[in-house]
Length: 114
Image (cartoon, rainbow, N blue to C red; front, side, top):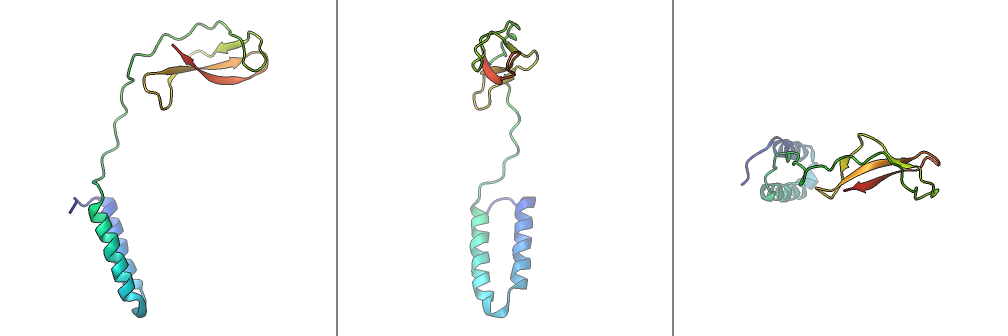
């Protein structure tokens, strides 16, 4: 049996309250269901503490210069990196991206930064 946690204790307490509320003609079915739920609770893996945020897999690159590049929407050379927007790409540890904004058409997007 696993170590009781506050969440498991609360669930067990609620199951006991449910058993007390069940009508007489359904008590046996309710007890059977409660027993199955408790068995499932006993076999759940122990709850792990929230993982600490991991450090980036590699050091962030230097921020790109603010020189504008060609905008993917209007094709003018007005798509500029916005300073201080460098972040790690979601789902890709160790890869970084910066926020770009077109000074002409207003298009905004996150682009990889190397």
